[in-house]
Amino acid sequence: MTDTAPETVDSLPSWAQKVIGDLRSEAATNRKAATDAQTERDTYRDELAGIATKTALDGLTGILADPEDLARYVDTTDLLGDDGKPDPGKYEQAARDLATERPHLGIPPKPAGRSGGEVSGGRTELARPTDTATQIASGTADFVSLVQGTN
Image (cartoon, rainbow, N blue to C red; front, side, top):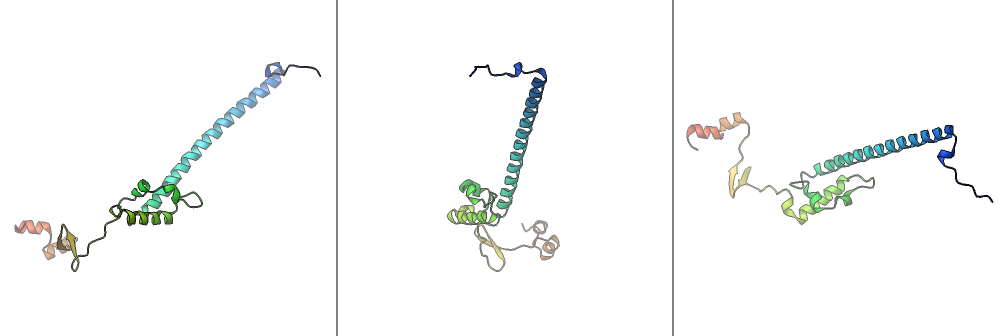
């Protein structure tokens, strides 16, 4: 066996050095493009996850006063489906469970008033029509009371 020194790029002919230099440059460009593509993919993945989460949270408006409370009290990674996306059914069940455990986070039930009345501040008021013409005709508009001097 003969001991020979390993070849280096510098010991190769100039045409081989040029080919190796070009290949290294191309590889560096491809690595940069791959890194950029991965960064872009991750950005889109995060945006899509945010949209899916927002959609799932929007479905909770009838359960929680502030749907964002779910993420404050529950580990939302447990609410993902098999596809890794937020599962609206799991979100809804978790919100119902949270509202049961912490009733102050849920939407308060509407108090039952007498025959269409609304309870406010411990007293019952009759529901007022919201249409201005109807209010004027029935005399319940606040400005009618002001004009008449009864308020």
